[in-house]
Image 1: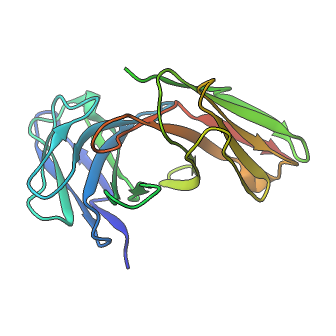
Image 2: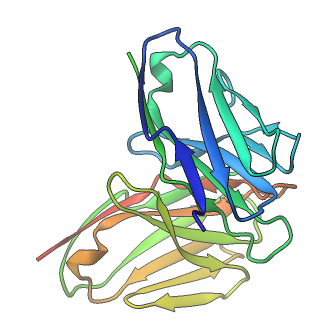
Image 3: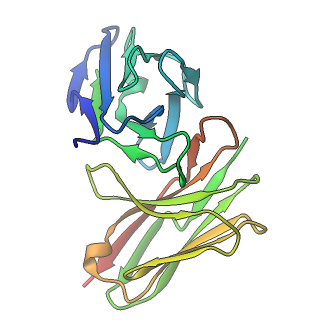
Length: 114
Length: 112
């Protein structure tokens, strides 16, 4: 039982390049989330999904797109990376119907945009 | 818009001492979480507080929730070096997906 995994762990992009971050969970969770963490700050929600085929915007969605084609996977895309997107990205997942609705976090992806 | 404020942001304390971290939030919420993060690592769940007056303890850490005051506290008793980490509180945004809004974190350093 791997829990929540993220690929890749590290990535360096040049401004304007694109990339996709993959989050996978094997706990059959309905809800999945993408957060970013900047130095000295808490996590901020980028996008989330309440089920396969559904996505919604969080607090800081600009410059990102997401897709949830399979229940176990949640992809985060950067179409044209900018230095302001340098951050650590965390994925999380949770059940929709089991208390206490705890979110389980992946190990993170450290992205640098130069 | 839900705002979550933690204080202090930085805390340096001696081993064996007690201290409290505070988490204030701005609107009604039905649950609050505390997480621990070690440098370069992911978030580890510590406590989930589900109701007014809830108190949970694990080892040297005790968390409580006062929903009327919109305040949670994380109390550290007789600190040890292994507790050095960043601690975050997070509050559920009322909504369909239970999105979390995080505080900025409290970076705790326990000195020998």
